[in-house]
Amino acid sequence: MCKSLSLVVEDVLSDSTLRVILNNINPQIKIAATHGLQGNGYIRRKISGFNRSSRGQPFLVLTDLDNGICASQLIQDWLPEPRENNLLFRVAVREVETWLMADRRGIAEFLSIPVNHIPEDVENIQAPKEFLMNAARRSSKRTIRDDIPPRLNSTAKTGPNYNGALIRFLSWDIGIFPAPPITRPA
Image 1 (spheres, rainbow, N blue to C red):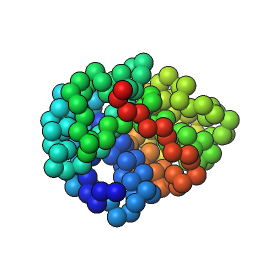
Image 2 (cartoon, rainbow, N blue to C red; image 1 turned 60 degrees about the horizontal axis):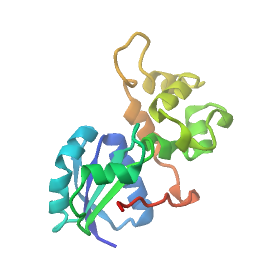
Image 3 (cartoon, helix red, strand yellow; image 1 turned 120 degrees about the vertical axis):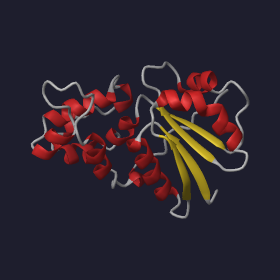
């Protein structure tokens, strides 16, 4: 296992999620740098450069599948050249929020909603971020209702403290979940 690696992510929620996962896997791993934080378009434009840079420093890339059909196809489309051994390219199906909702009981408790409001098969939720915001609207906690969904008549896509609120949830113990399948290009 490497001692240090660089992260490439879409946003701060993905960055925080990866940090929690890596810390649970091996607390000795150090994050050398975080790149991206500008959405998936940035990652797509820069992936070849990250691939080349991984010859000297391991890189872990995480992007969302969003409305794509297949994670392996996304990887192949974005990175048609051979992938370097030190480049780990992972795709969250549909969005990283799906990983948070995999802990149905934990996220329901955090949102202060009944657990049966979170489907058992969260990977079949077509728009996980919207689903999560709608669930937060039904919360009995005012801070959840104020932080996660956008305000009424707002043009914002998320609430004013969407990332901050969900990052608070990331204290969850990922050890209770089976490891997600590893998607590698064919």
